[in-house]
Image (cartoon, rainbow, N blue to C red):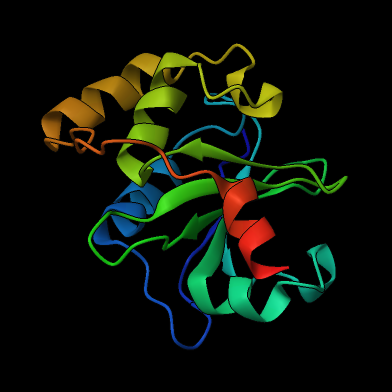
Length: 158
């Protein structure tokens, strides 16, 4: 059976990935593809063509880390130096939204099958294993007052 693809070793200049993402990548790389939905982990720069009007700002503030089969990307976006980076969707058809206020929140949503991303939320037999791993490693969702609105970020930069 095929395993998940994980390529987190080449991070775009000026960015770093949270240690939790590296740990999750190591764990995920041992799992059967599809057991947690359909995606791959890959650290890449935000593509300029996704939104040329704010590309420079997005490339400065965000790093992509998850690819969906339809070409959509999830990125960690630093809205505020005091808060954890939020997880945002850069949709293949231009759609944009905040998916989670933190990476921890996204991982718990994947474990619960409730990310509102169909490729990830499809039935998977590995959700309990991810939930157990999150518990064993002590991954809790940080208390973030409000999830930042990615569309407001985009509008402020246009």
